[in-house]
Image 1 (spheres, helix red, strand yellow):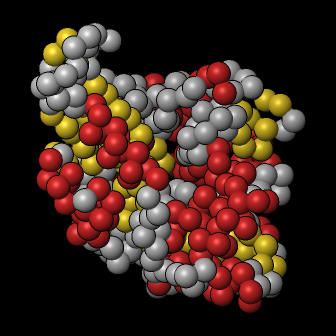
Image 2 (cartoon, rainbow, N blue to C red):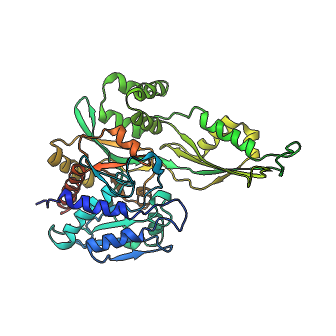
Image 3 (spheres, one colour):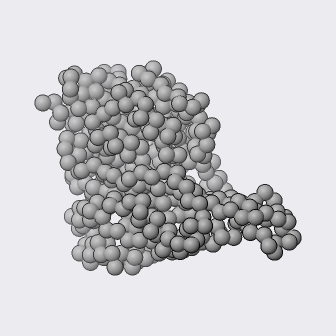
Length: 451
């Protein structure tokens, strides 16, 4: 029997998590996830374990022991931090959790406090005994620092506390609305993700007075030129097996499917998609290309001093099947070998793209739950261009998927544009659908792993 989770309860918890302002700007002293750990403790009771590798960067773990030793464990994995906002681009206060037109607005509403709140609501039923225990342990882990790579969150826990957080199966982000195909709507279920290969690029020069630049070496100029080249250059195409599986499951129609699977036609298909749905086109491009996005540039101390050092941060994402050598080859092709040798390129993170096969008890449980909620079990095994905490668990052998269920008030591309964007919002109805689907998935997973 599946326990119903009221959407209003999930919405109340989501509003509090948004108002906690756990903004992670990438520095160790940001985040303040202790606020949301306290909120969840008030809601769920004392956690089994609390982890704080840096003051304020708190992750918390709750567990319901299983009934059969050795049965597979299931982890509900949600993060509590959010990215910074540019408030000028919002139509509401991003941390007030405004309710308007049936939506809750605020930073984190879709990334991923909506799912974290839904997970907590489902876990509460198991902690109180309203929902029965599973054969294996059921865990809920609310982690810090996902938005800065997880080094103070999931990365730290899987490296230093694996015996406490270990689980054979993981449910996490991301979730997206259904996509219409030739056979009807299908639910994207995240099965694979690109690998982040962040780089810092530095240039050195010779300082001098800004009024007399002759004979100096302005570090900003060659770096700015390199960044402009990287930003403007066409990005390498790769049609991965993961992308092919998604397109074949989606079945958008023979003509579009053929273009989406042809390396020579994909760029034209992206341009055509952008005319009607730029958010979806952006996602398609990212799922079929090695992407390079120069996102910060720092140089100089004041306007009349020629800078002797300049630094840029570049977000590079590799597809399954691509390696660091592909990144370096692209840099050399775009910049030229001499320019690459003159610059200092520092590795910040190099995570290999990875995924989990769409099969087994958790995959089947997601499908059975979808049939109960939506009347069909069409699931689209989905490659995502972003990195999530799932990668840390997959490295330890866990099977990890990401999913949520939304109503039809926001389309796939529009919702994707809200990730790290303006006017993030989720409908209360979607919160109810996600919690219901999650509760049914957990219950069905228990049934499928009973023997």
